[in-house]
Length: 616
Image (tube, rainbow, N blue to C red; front, side):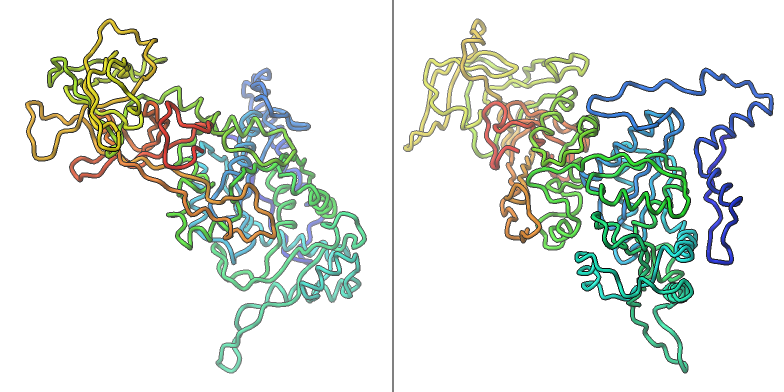
């Protein structure tokens, strides 16, 4: 069996300080390279046949836009995705996890999903479950799921080592004063405290609980003003090295450890420690962490930890999109959206519900992977790529506006039971064919009939050429009914109008010879951007830029074949666009088919059929 990595024993204080030999063994146990070599040695000693040529598997070519990882070798790469479960994953997180997953799979090694649970005030079990679910939706299967809280005792031990080495001190400077001192590059009055005093204060920080009993009464204890800071350099040009905070108190019960701990490491301390202990070889971090990379390396050097390579990439930003958890939460709380999976939301579940194709998202993300330039992408560029994937499998149907349509009466002898077979997809016959019902009376979109005249020849898609023989209008000159006849020898190329159509639905209460329905009721939903400003600045009050008109619904008569669609399927309504099934048709309960429009990257809808909102 393959060797399983086990975290080194917890280091809990001065008395438990490891010897140099023990630290060496800990470091060796956390190294993927040594684990691989040990496994190979065991196989040889046990007289197992080892195919040396197969130890290093072949790697696929890099996807265009991606760079290789520095110093990476097959089966010796471990990446990690460390989300804080204080909200739902959004499109920016999707890029991070897809890049980490790509490298882990390309180099035939491991991806760790580690929940950064160092701030109990923000973390919820709901968000943890949603993140794991979203990773599944993205097609990402981690090799291991861990929590920073698995290492709290170990991290505390490393913090004590920093104190004992004179590389950390306890500080009670008020937060605003500390911020000013760091800006002015002025050291704290506490920076010269003795190791003994610092250890005492740190012990008190980690062991003062939320309440204490005194004379049978419970006495509330305020959060300690003390924190642990690294002693690096208050004069450094890199502000992240001006004695950053490493530990602070938080009396909120932790979702996993409950009230076991009352002080927690910051992400800046925990991340480089746990990355090293878990065998991470390459830490992928966005360019906004560039200044903190030096701090990350300082902690690993100061603690004699195995070094981890950092691979930087630019975060994914989109115009007219909000990625701030605080702002997204506000949208949910004030009812602007229906929830975290609202299709207008940039959350993973929101964009997937809108109709994002997983392969398109993956390829688009990887194509941006190597870039370190932070840019605000246009959604249209992504939607255009998304359309290419959708179009491969999207079956074609038709739908006509339920209220804004014109009846065309055919003069030909068209029977109640006449049908035609037509391909689901004009470029892929393997998708099969569907039955199109012909009829004496058909519906056309009202906007398509504007300006029609007697003698004009039009094309009814999937049927043929029809010559208009009669036009009826109302007092305003708007066409209300047409008559026509099929022209078997008509020239399709010469006809200027190629129109979608459907047989008129059966009028409720009437009985036809053929009782099969000709259409089903459908709701088409269109969406617009939630904010009206392309890029919100830090000083902007985002509520001033909330778009009040982001949802529009159109009721249509849909092709009867739509009744068989399942949730999540993507189809094309010809001349309207691409749609994803959000709620399948349930005829017995009289629930209509609910379709969400999927943008295609164009400024205008296909076929000239305009929607009610801007075409995004």
